Length: 137
Image (cartoon, rainbow, N blue to C red; front, top):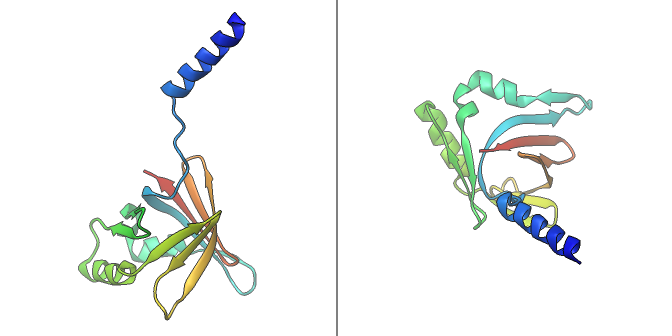
């Protein structure tokens, strides 16, 4: 009996000392990869191409809010790029249904559906032709 009580006490102590951080989308992230699958089935690294044309994107912070909005915090970007990104993200919304991430930009684009999963400090969005990988800050 004493062993069981001691075991429970030690487990409770460990859990309270090192609480598990819930894996959820809310909070601040940075994008570290973005791949598209071409019509021929080839994986294309569009993140590296984007960084060549807009190096400041490497320092962009995505702050996913519980109300379904995402703030995009841009640092050291050209004013024209900043304006364009704010315009694109102004109406961007998301919602989560089980392990699905549904994003909505506008009626013109419609809703995008991704499978959402977490791996350590990484958040991975996957659709039929696209993968985005974020790292928690």
